[in-house]
Amino acid sequence: MTEDCRTIRLEVREGVATLTLNRPDRLNSFNEQMHLELRAALDTVRAGRVDASVRALVITGAGRGFCAGQDLSDRAVSAADEAPDLGASVEKNYKPLVMALRALEMPVIAAVNGVAAGAGANLALACDMVFAARSASFIQAFCKLGLIPDTGGTWILPRLLGPARAMGLALLGDKLTAEQAEAWGLIWKCVDDAALLPTVQAVAKQLAAGPTFGFAQTKHAIWASSSNDFPAQLDLERDLMRECGRSHDYREGVAAFMEKRAPRFKGN
Image 1 (cartoon, rainbow, N blue to C red):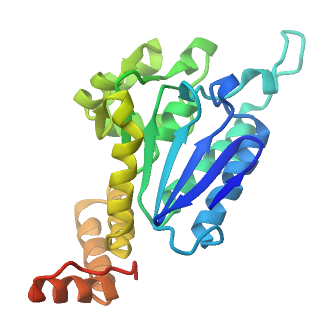
Image 2 (image 1 turned 120 degrees about the vertical axis):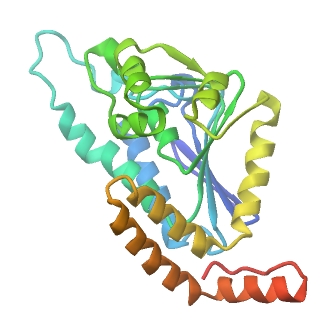
Image 3 (image 1 turned 90 degrees about the horizontal axis):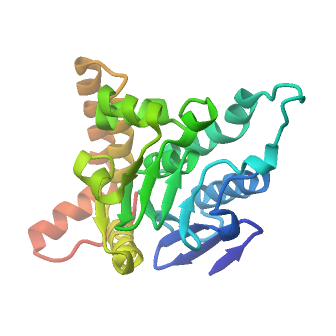
């Protein structure tokens, strides 16, 4: 099934929802309408309203780019205008977007098919796994406008890359190729352009058929580790393992192993 809006497309097939940013004439840059439609789509996926079988989400872009960040023409100002409150834009749009991604209890994969700049780069990096086409690139373009990396960039970059590389990318705004991003550990994998969507869809289907209750707890534990000390993280592992051990998927996984058959996971 497919749902088309003005700025995005949402398609469901074989347990995988594919959300395509669909403003190719603007390199899929964000405007207010896209933010509204993205939040609604993520809420729909979370609640199972588009299809209750959805257990993995793919995010990609239409045309030759993934997402060029904020569409500046959507909030253009002149030197004579009153200074805009960009913090209000973060609070209203970008913070809820990345928080919604993190809260989804299913794997979220970014398929970066071209340039990912500014908020577009950090949207991709906020996903659980990132695959990028060989021709894709990542640019922390905020410095060109006298801004800071938002959409979680100041949190994500130093944790993935360390402070030296994070600072260099943020202050210089240099283009980082997909191959370099993989070598630095910023993304999971760089693949040939033609292989991007087939590769991502195959991985998404594999994950959607897997023990997604356990995947959700794994996501919770890994994201929590950045703020927990070691004893607190061990306590969290204890609590989440307790929940996993009570799940259907754990019982099914053990039964399938003992019976030497393929497991039939349900995601609960």
